[in-house]
Image (cartoon, rainbow, N blue to C red; front, side, top):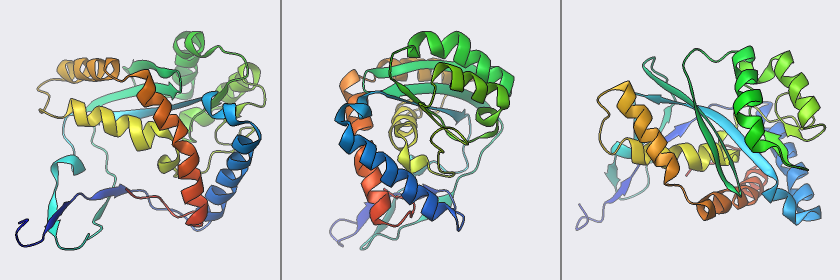
Length: 238
């Protein structure tokens, strides 16, 4: 294939953006670029958090799909979810990875608040830190927003928070553009045989992430924000 001048390309998993998303994404990035310029240390005082589903079987695993072509075909696939798997919560900051909480039940507002109170807060309780999550249903629950207003007054990022997280923006948070992809590369090198094995692999992969790698990922957020503004809110592909 190389003798024929073909190169390997992987497909990109995408999220469709609504018409209003472009302006909201650009405005959000412009706001935070300015904040980072005024306070260079701020980028080290943000906890980025998220949940991800690790499936036993996936409809598209782009890391196992390679297309050979002379020019990049820019293949993209819509993200699909299967039912069998594990939902994991993690947080990341310049100081390293924060936790790996495994949800045993469907994530609801009360359950999400419970893990914030009992699991996350003891590790996140630091002065002048910001907390970020996206706008999925459990994050938007009234009891969750009230708790965040109390623990991170005017310093949390999320749907209808002091800083409104733009919907459908996994390309702007290190949990999505770095953490989950990095972990799944390790976890799925060999197909897990059981849910228990899948969980053990996730735990082992989390332990392998060094602090300096987390710091680089968090610092790269600024470049992602600049790229988003330059592309007028378009989704950032690989």
